Image 1: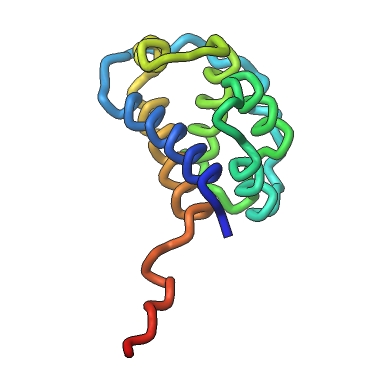
Image 2 (image 1 turned 120 degrees about the vertical axis):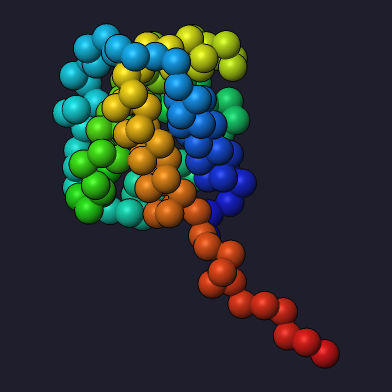
Length: 142
């Protein structure tokens, strides 16, 4: 089961996706090739476990390094995989003490396609790694 760290990491990435979804940037600088070379055969357990292991003190660069090491599961859709690559490449460039303004600045450099793909990735992350409350058994009634 995934704990608060997973939810915090997913929230950070979802927030980044939400910032990207706000629009603004219409062109994107060429992305670094680093994340494109990340593995594409991670197990869902390893992929999600990477987020679970992240702490509130994890810097954007450390998060990028951890995500580059694990990569994504093979079943991830192409747009979500591209969103992973865009996000990781941009996390590598953020300062260790990144603030909302840094995320906004990052967003301004994303094309509409990159924005859409980052949202696709954060959606995939939430579906694959955050347990559904619908399947949680309810407490027995007395």
